[in-house]
Image 1 (spheres, helix red, strand yellow):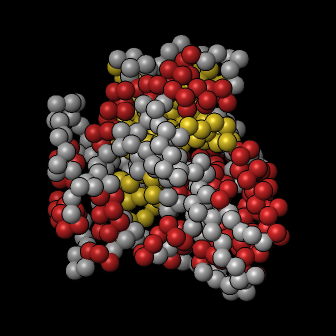
Image 2 (tube, one colour):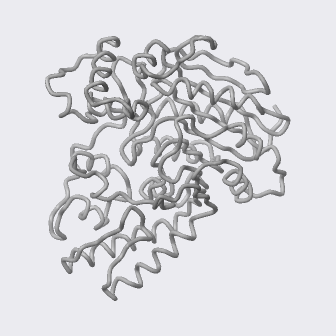
Image 3 (cartoon, rainbow, N blue to C red):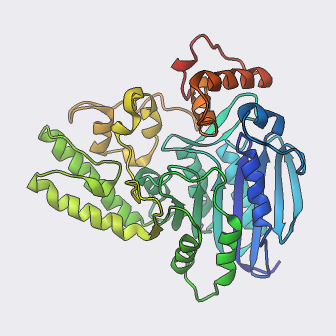
Length: 415
């Protein structure tokens, strides 16, 4: 098979309540499809629309489209798709499933450049891509998602020139660092939302069109700028540079150390460049940190400012009354947390206190009722808490999942 200029691999997880939007993303990709210079391949998961109707009772869900549930691979053409393989009831929340898709796509559709699109829910540094089609509701750990991607370079020698994280809250320095922690890493550039994106996700037809209009002289930065400008979304394109990321981690740790050592408050807002501290000792670190962060930004476009920041960092304040403590074991799995005094701040530990990195959760874990409730609330924001809880109970009953509902409010992501 002739080596094309680009292969676009789309991992579209609709094994959950986003199934209608994920299916629409396939139809949208077909508006442009593959060409003589581009191969577009999609692995798409679909939950039953009967289940989707349980989860989204107020949504007008059509049953007129092609009806099937499970996971399939398609070669995307203009106005149609060619079914390559029916994988059956595969768990899209398993990082090994993601890894297998990437390796298969690279080996089958060889190209000079590769784009990987991951489409579904994102839950900050904790997890992504929930799958509700299995015997228990699952999510893929962020560290395992990055592991699957990081293995690609080592196992194939191939780079992912553009990684599109079509998921909310992926613009965290911890996630960028996890993808760039090695001197030789798979991911060269990231395109993602500045915090949240719409349920429908990114318009893949426009992304494919931007690549189609490029030529061999266009470098990836130019293509990324064109995509950002052509999509009516709050997006940021980020360069994954190991040396700069290593320096950023050092500067964050240095600032955290100084504040802990001097018993000073540190107020990073939700972004690295917003460190504010009157201490002159920290000022040089703050300025250098701002410069390093800025140097990673290839291009951005914020339509709705609302205090949005291009690259965020995990902070205790974001989790409010619920607290971050429960989620810290997931944070400890990320390389950014190791040998970093910022972890002391998140853990509410003094400089001389040890941080427990034991009992780290598995890469694929079970979502307990409260965590599932929070996911469902994202598509039922107008419902009351009791109404959402009833949806969770009905879903558990429909799926024959085993769990106690004595106190649904106490449950959260569980392993």
